[in-house]
Length: 336
Image (cartoon, rainbow, N blue to C red):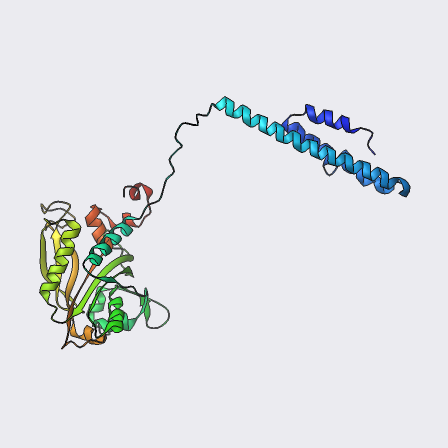
């Protein structure tokens, strides 16, 4: 048994500072500490003394541990009080602002587009991003090996016949198959994939397409709908023009242009000095597409149009390069 009484340990603990408390703990209770070594030597005592000595050593060890812990807590509390007093913290001052996330500009513009179309009576439809060739091309009047497929370079998957969808138009086919022969009015927002990568295109981007099918739907309904949409988004005074175009799934087809929002139609690099910017492609639904969707083209007609959400974001926020939307640079994104 150690020769030192409990008071010896208590006096040493009372005089120790915070590092000293840890040093005493190691010296007395560590692997090679004096109290640890004394307990280890109990095995060498006679059996009639081992029990009594062991109880005394354990009581001493527990008392030392308790006082070491109390002294450590006391010294830590005193140090904290001194630090707070020296720093003179003014609790009335406001805290530092915490950066709070907010929606991405693409999410902002998509939500705005959806709200515009929902207010016009459209329902929202969604579909898979991995599509089969029939829904992505064949049902939309893209025959196999037809040159029109060259407009949409696709990412084909290893499994035969599957690809990443090149547009959201397959959602229209799926919605038609579920709704035929009833009237239909939907929008289909979502991500699409094409092998493009330049200042105005990306390999992965977003579209929102609209489809209306009913009796006696005409080109006049299409023009009124897209004009209402464009003027709601860009302002009632924005110049608009329709011009003929070609899409395999519509006939006749047209594109909608708006007066350049960057130069106010004075001519700039982004509008290629024309004063106009392309906004969307549209047209009357091709009879073959109606048939593929389960409708009778002799009984109903319809129109469809689609817009690239990145392109609309560029026009709406006047962003010169689409890649700024994809780089995740907080200096750019924090402006929205």
